[in-house]
Image (cartoon, rainbow, N blue to C red; front, side, top):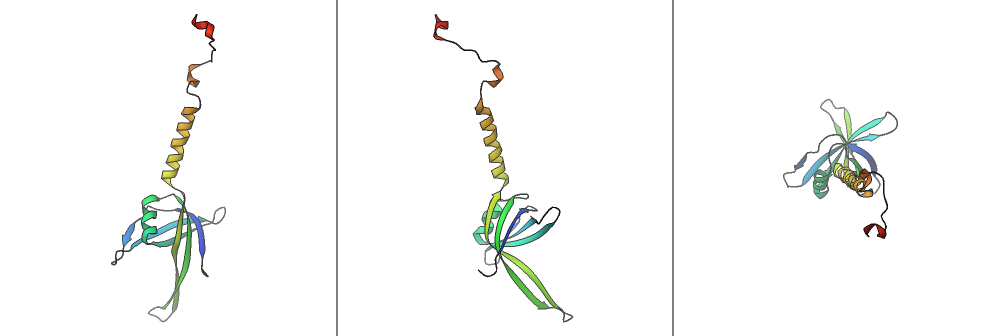
Length: 135
């Protein structure tokens, strides 16, 4: 592929899935890509088909995604005869790097692990009992 763009960023707003008249799913994926300390670029990537539906189902505002896309160049003349151009970004692949559900699952695992580490920690000092104690 000659024209490949790879981005990693956070989704900037809740997603809205729509359908074309031919019933093809379309999703505009707005992401913020951090380019350094205080430099952030906001890009909207268009996602089609089952990838759009899956992204809509599992991703939310604030989630981190990896996007592989192509860049489409659009050229035209406006009503004054000036040459205009624009770019659009069409996703080929979306990778879910961090979603709210994943984070919630991680927190649940952490809570469970914490509870399972020492169930008697709240009972004070440990004492030992030998077999002679029962006699």
